[in-house]
Length: 488
Image 1 (cartoon, rainbow, N blue to C red):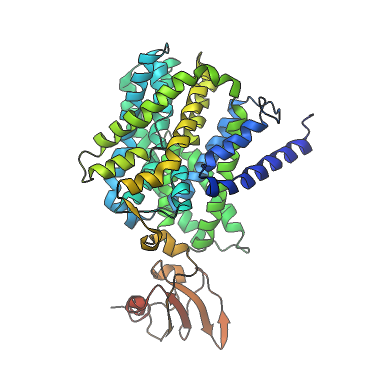
Image 2 (cartoon, rainbow, N blue to C red; image 1 turned 90 degrees about the horizontal axis):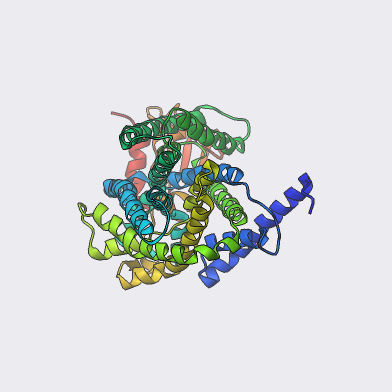
């Protein structure tokens, strides 16, 4: 096929459609979506029936970084501070100490069983040291499986925050191999600077995004998602230029945005959920195109051994030591160890050695690819069974609604109240988003001068307005009355 612009658009569209339609089999067969999307890409690739010759790691890495940025932002917006606050330090420990220990132990094992150098082995360990939140929770949602205690927020926090650490380790070890880094003592201050700059600027960008969306009144509501798309990439690139960790900054900015009172918040969160799915499909199919299945066979033995060590030794070692100072039971630590799915992130990171041109880069890439396939194929289908065997699963009818479920649900509200703004109400002259309504409440109608207004976050309330407010339950009525009546 001659690749004209029209052909490229057609092939891309067909691959995207094929990936989405193939995902219908995930819920029925239990096959993780990651494997399905990768499979579509591999079938379409040079060794598959499609015969598409694609071997450009630079384009793959660019698409991967953009996709990971939006996926991280979507995950961060879905992360509610009250949920993760009790497990904050445990999550930080998993995403730093846990990742480091997993990386080092796997690297040592690979060095022992292969002819790779120590640095190449450690690079492999760093590349596959982060977990994949999308793969974990797509399985849990498909099986309608809830988890006891704080396991879910902990796993969400770890999966969203361990990519920056894995990326830092990968870049640092790659620097030693290419002689761009001369001493291990250069790494420690670099790590501290990257994390500090990334965290601080991420929070500042998050506050700026909230302020921008709340203060700038656009003529069309559909432009707010476009503005947010631009701000996410600006956050990553500016922080990266400032020598901070861009991935961490995007995640922190997203948590800040997701926990703030913001206009059009519900529609923006649903929009970004769709964007995250689009980015996953594009990224997985592109990665599938990049891999050469015939080149997987020579590394099957090494990759399978590394995958088994990662699943049964390296990941549990990292989890148990990282959580040794926190109050988690043996069963909980065991389950967290099993929820160590590797996803597209390690495959994207594996393109870094390819671009750097190190000698064993393609071998490392195919080993990483096989490790990811093995991890997803073994762990993903067995997650519900592991939760049940360990006594950590909740039946669907007992599964608690999270704060995110309440915020995005259209049918959870069980009470309605109507309230009139009197002359001395503190809400007069304020926008709805400035009042601080509970996340599980919704102002659905404002009656003003015998006319009905459909409000949004920018709607300014006035004396004499009648508000129709839907609530999760009637116990929230005193809170609403206090917010809207006379201040003291």
